[in-house]
Image (cartoon, rainbow, N blue to C red; front, side, top):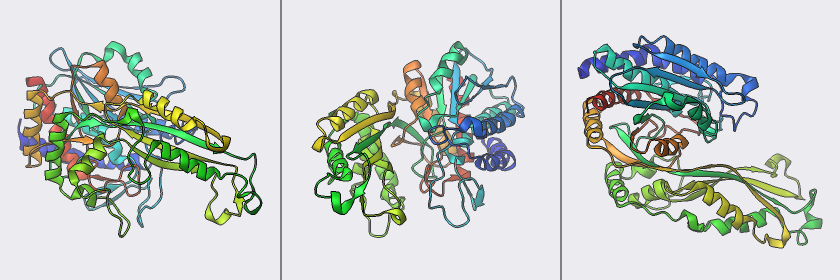
Length: 468
């Protein structure tokens, strides 16, 4: 492979085609179905999928076929197939659905307004991970431009990932044998510890999301008349949360969430700690004076990649400050998000959490916990020698540094699904969500130079996969 030609081709494609298309894509508010119940009527998801499909169809890739699949009542799926040499298949994965807007965007930035500042493209969904469709096909086209052979490739781009991928299994079942015998999975929906080298994800935490409701009255009552007689739904809620989490340390009290971390992962974590050092926590937008949970970088990485955590991500039943009268409220509901160790059984955890929270509620309060989604994590199989060599070669060629293995604190439901379906497959799970890129939050951005280098690295791995 001519690495200079590869770089020129990828850079030009990004500048002239991918970035402009991503700008259009960012402007489409195609929120994932959990955040837009009327997504089908609004039509944003179809618009985003057709934008990506039209771009794909225009690529001069030999044998390329592109299909937008639509099962009744489900988000669409973009499926592409590229014939190649040999009997096995590479599956390239990404998603087009987006997280909601969130608040706190900097002046001049908006979630649905693409804005380029320097080498960063701001806006919701560009980095997480609208670019995956375009990067994947560009890597394949780059090989064909140089006459370099590759295996058969299929690309699966879903529109439900941010809601837990609940539509995806139905499409995988429908596709059936069309997927082929997958020996390599390339996923571009992950993180990178910095923008200086290729990062490959070795594990993903699972995610349990549910709603906890505490009800004490049928209607609100004057707080002066009711307090001291009626228990506060918020205080009951606090006591229930103490059953599953130590509020002082953040340690989980759920037995099925005690992680067993493989020795290889601990060794990899030590290397990541040496590479990233204090940037593990300095990259976070802490409010003035706030400190991380620990100054031990190794411990923070363990917490983030294998440790169970609980976040309260939403609340109902509490009025805004401007409407907060002296009323003892009838009920409080919170959205709970549990991050699970990669090897935890999400359904088992959900059942245990429900049992803990609903058992013998204080004062006989009406307590209910409903599981909204339960996604298992993923722990990669040992890396094959050819893939280890390929990733290092690619990283040195296009970043100038060695590749690094890293666990990720987030979730990609499809990886666990594919790991079970294709247990012998190798995985290249990577991405460009680096420091301050802030997926899901305000000021999300895509680091364009990293996108270019990552695309070139994927091309190298696809070539080496064929040659192995």
